[in-house]
Length: 159
Image 1 (cartoon, rainbow, N blue to C red):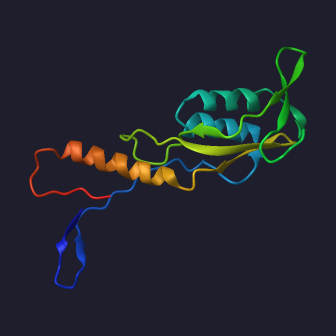
Image 2: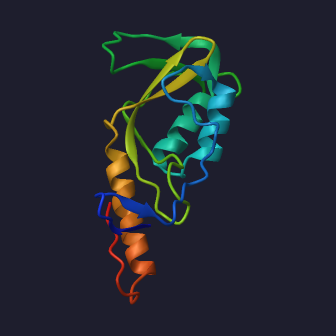
Image 3: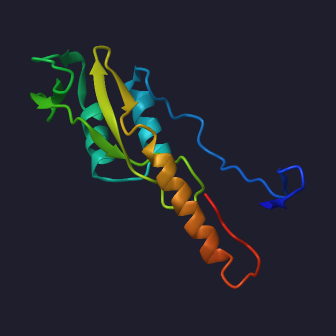
């Protein structure tokens, strides 16, 4: 919270608040699928793409990642579908996920990610929304504060 402009064209800062965020979210780097699954389950809001990624990375056969006509978009992985059966599946791309990146009182913004796998097996997420989630989060925080401060005079929430 800031004051009105002072004579030196600056504002006094009264209150500053930062969200406590998980420290295990890894972007732009391949990690083993066990760590990847733990990250998805503990630091991302449950949705259909998260469930699909958990299924793909949880059932992948060790060292079975194949690149089939990899044009940067399509990729295939061999996954176990039963006790002894193995099938090829197309790895979803892009995926829509909502990592915990803002205050828990705010609905976490969803954004696009490029999902890739490598032999090992290892998996990675690469942000693909150009940072648009930040604008959405700021708008949601502004709305939350306006709702909470409704009826309080002389407060203007800006974002």
